[in-house]
Image (cartoon, rainbow, N blue to C red):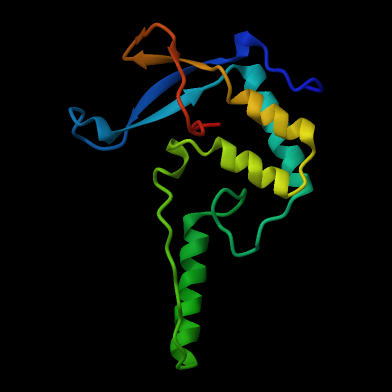
Length: 158
């Protein structure tokens, strides 16, 4: 990892489809989860921990944080609304739908953000290499497809 290179054998993941809703004939009722090689998963975990130790998030941010849940966010929202009513003051609340945010080509933006936060170059390069030249095997029931070149976006399950 000190060389920021990711071995070719780590670059193939298996995508498993998880059914979200009852009608299995509708493709949008499935969610794809990537199963990474254990070595790559460990590399992503170590890299994530190093970045987390170098940065901090706003306390108000609930998403993508360990130990915080949707229930915590709803409780905080309820307290804000109750305080607003009690003080007879308006509450301005904004909801952002990130349902498909990481499906598009966001890697350049993520790398730029890390650069602006003064994350060390070797960690940024490691992340860039993790998402370059990857292949996916799709698992359909018990069968696997031939390797497919991975497109853009951030993997779910990573």
